[in-house]
Image 1 (spheres, rainbow, N blue to C red):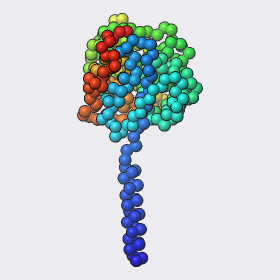
Image 2 (cartoon, one colour; image 1 turned 180 degrees about the vertical axis):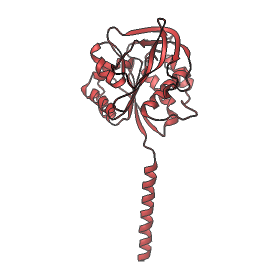
Image 3 (cartoon, rainbow, N blue to C red; image 1 turned 180 degrees about the horizontal axis):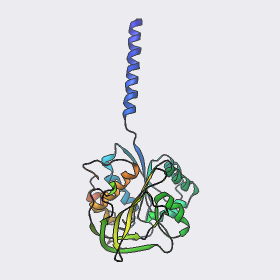
Length: 282
């Protein structure tokens, strides 16, 4: 009887050790917040923040075993935001006047600062990079490396050539020159110390190629990626945009994208909007 009990005890211990070992071998998923807002007064088919991040989630589907994605709407005061950010390893912002929004709640600003300090990934798309008031510029630069801010900010609606400025960077892997219509922010106000900041994509505006996307290896050890395009929802259809944004997000999280079948596929249904018959306008 004693021998049988010892066998059971040893067997249980071995099973527990095996389970602990297996659990230890499982990769820890990065926790990513996709933060959107509802309509901000722009015409339909522009600034479609919620729909755009739904598309982005589809593009990131092939890395679901490495990245746990949570989509949230940050309308109004967003009181739960600081706690969500404290649990996150990265955040993607696609919302209205992002620099002002981050500063709109001291707890929110502190939570973003903490995410940055612990090396989290930060991504901003289009108007999430902006502020009409200059007083929000400095604080936002410390997080994203650059900002489309102040009363002298530059905007251009046009069809233009977009070129790769750094073909060796992981974010631009597989990208080539394209011609596209978009609203680009340019003459971005970058941090004074630009070490670690790499312009990635340039758009020809006013007979000059201006950086409209960049990657920044921050002094705190984290990474930030930003892209000023994506005014029009239809541009999510472009494979070049899909690859740029999806690779930018993974780079910010320090996750290597799969060599094949990435980004994930999106269908016409994924891209459709409730009022898709309406014409796009600035």
